[in-house]
Structures are given as structure tokens and as C-alpha cells.
Amino acid sequence: MSFKPVFLLAAALAVACTAKQAPQQRGIPRACPESVGMSSTHLALIDSAVNASIGAGEIPGAVVGVVHQGVLVYEKAFGYKSLVPKRDTLSCETLFDLASLSKCVGTTLSVMQLVERGQLRLMDPVSRYIPNFKPWKDPATGEKEEITVQHLLTHSSGLDAYVEMPAYLAEFGPGTPEQLLHFIATRAGRNFRPGQEQLYSCLNFVTLQHIVQRLTGEQLCDYAQSHIFDALGLEHTTYFPLDRENWKPNLAALCAPTEVQEDGLPLKAAVHDPIARVINLGNSGNAGVFSNVEDLAVIAAMLLNGGSWNGVRILAPGTVRKMFEVPAINHPAVARALGWDTYYSGPYTSGDIFELENLRGHTGYTGTSIILDPDTSTAVIVLSHRVHPLDTGSVARLRAVVSSIAAAACDSRS
Image (cartoon, rainbow, N blue to C red):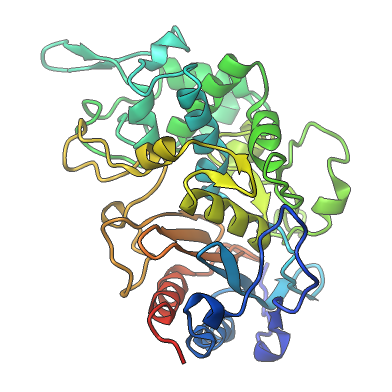
């Protein structure tokens, strides 16, 4: 099957979203960039960068948001929401499959809430919550070392990056989340001594999902919905559990589709990641959250504000600081914070202007990203669906370019 999408008129499809009615009480305020010391002229350079990416066929469209000092100063949609089965334009309300950004805004925030409530410790061995969870074992000496919650959050556990889907499905079949956990606990590789190296692994966050579920008695999708998304008043952020019939049809209709499947139709309101969709049926620690630019702007503003927003506290300030630290107990080769990337752990989407030391962020395979700069109280959100209609697009350079423009706009008043 081949597609020949037309990327003409990208600039004409750009939709500025700042001229809205006054935000609701629990939303995020909009403001002219100059009112908070930024340059609207410089931020406008984002338009040409995104349109160039669309014109080059790298992405069908994107929504970009910039938050500065607690206000949304730039919010614009470009290009197409869908190319298959029909062409439709993007709007700022569009929900995107966040892919691995779900690790941050869903799983990590849930885990850190349990930590600050004393239900969970970062240094607890995973086997405390999953009793059959194997430790690492030195092949030469037989020495064993437990994998901890902190190892999972920092991708320093040594667990395999993923599962071999054909082999797993042949043995266990689809819709088997408990079997997947048992597989991770007893059979997944332990590739190095915990805390000594880093290996990005979706299995780390599937394991964290089950720890949250065992401690709370709720599915991760339900816990995160009530304790994070609903608590913040987010109306366009949710998981789409595939075993719940006709789940949130109003939000499903707003979702940007992703990759075309064997039936010739793209996935829509169904998570793209195979572990999350096929095995965990949409309730998964590694992927599964869908959201839009305004809701992610609220999450970013909350984190940059020390864990609270509009009188709602999601995390304590000290918890946010701890979450953004690179644990000193890990080997220096492990440069990740708790659930979040640093510049030094990749994938280098922060551009060339921001001071790098305190930047935190994450990307999603589908084409999403968020960068948080506590030094300037700035967040840069890029939402695209580079996997539509086929998994051939690229957003890596665009992310960095947009970040550079936003960073320079903090110092380029005009």
C-alpha cells in the first residue's frame, strides 16, 4: 500500500489559537508574549519551521505550545489532522497519542504521589510488591542484587527494552497483562548490574504500572485520571482502555489518527504502541495517554510551579525537585532523572539556546515532546503524528528548532 499525501498549502492551514474566549477557571491563561517578557515576533518564527517540516513531508501536521511564567504565550495548529481515510485539518483541540510521554504525565506522576504519601519508597525492591520478581544475578559469581523502584524510573534496571511481540503473542496471546507482568518478573533479561548503566525500557514502566495498581487497587488509567487529570481540571486528557465499549466518544472524535493498519484504516483513539494496545489493551505504564496542547500546558505549568496549579496540589515542591534530580546513587553513566530525560540522557530535542543543566523533558515515538526549563519557567510542547499515515515521518530536528526559537524569544523582546 502506498500513499502520496499532498503537503501543499501548509501555511494556509495554520490555525492560531490565542484568540479564544477567556479561559475557564481551571485552565491556563493566555497572554501576549510581551506581557511576560517574550518576543511575539521571534515566536512567529515557529510558524515557518513547522510549515517547512510539513512541506518536506516529515509530518502531516503539528500543534505547538509555549508556556512562559504560567501563561500560554504561543498556541497554534498547522497542517492536517488526517490524510487517510480522508483529509482533515488540525485544530488546537486535537488529541494526540502521547506514546512515551505517558511515562511522565501518567505513570511517573502517579508513582511520585505514592512516594510522597509514604505508600512507596524509591529504594524499595520491586520484589516487595511483585514477590516473584527476579533480581539481577552476576553470571560469574552468582552474586544477586535487587532491582528497585528508582532503577525502574531511571531506566537503570537492566531489564530488556521490549518484548519480542510475535514470540510473546504466540505463547500468551493478546489481552494478557498479568501474563506480561509474570514474563517481565521471571523471564525478561537482566542485562547489567542495576544502577550501573542505562537501557531505555518500556518494561520498566509496565512494571511500575502494576506497582501502582497493587498499591491503589485501581487500574493505572483510572488512578491517573482521577488523581492527576481530573484533579487539574483537564477535559481533553485520558487513556482509551480498549476493553471499555464506546469510551469517551466525544474525545475519541477529536483524536488524530496514527498508523494505517492491515485493514487500510489508521488507528484512532487506540494507542499505537503494541505492548500498550495489543497486550495491555490501552491501560499501560509505558504508553496510552492522549492529550492536547492546552492540557499539557497546564501540566507543564503545574510542574514549573512546584507541583500545584490554581489551588490544586498534585505534588509537593520537594517531590518535584526530587523527581527532576539525577540520583547520585546511580553510576555517572546513568544521566536520567526520575521518569524524565535530561539533556545528557538524550534524545537532544532541547535545541541550542536553553541552558542545559536543569532542562527536563521527554519524547513520544508518535512525534510528541515536552521540554521544561525551570531556569526561565518555560515549557515547549510539540504534538505531531509523524506515524500517520505510515511510520516514516520524522520530527527530531523540528523539536530542536522549535525549542531554540522559544528559548531565544525569552531574551528577544521586540
